[in-house]
Length: 186
Image 1: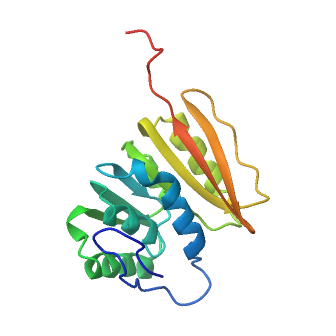
Image 2: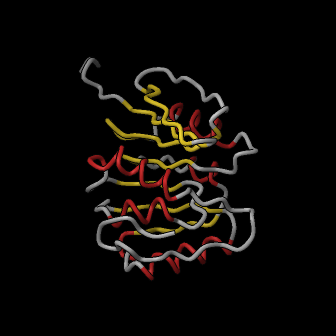
């Protein structure tokens, strides 16, 4: 698992032992960042189910202004901190240990949100609904949701909308957009 490009290009990230954490595959990560490459620089990012932190670290390496990493497991939190130090990205990172859904209650807004929870749970659908219901994306923000290809994700009401779903074998990535308020009355 390596950082693809940017200031930390080529750095090998440490991984967690065992099968409880499932890192995004290199092919999926490379494709994902190719899709959003022009939407990263200067943006505020949330890596909600951080695991090893590789998605948020890749965003920071590519010029994101800051990234908040949220992970419930203490060993994963320590690993994210180690990976950030290895990549010299700690100055723009905030690592939080705790429940991801509880963290969303803080009401903080983001430009990009990475959602890659354990597949066998309903955490993804719950997080997507909560972010939309409480409008936690800034205007023109995006949620990037990784999920099994056979999982049906919820449609959202305006100003949120489901964008394209990209398929990579058994894995899919769906992009949600938060549209602007151009049509709103002032």
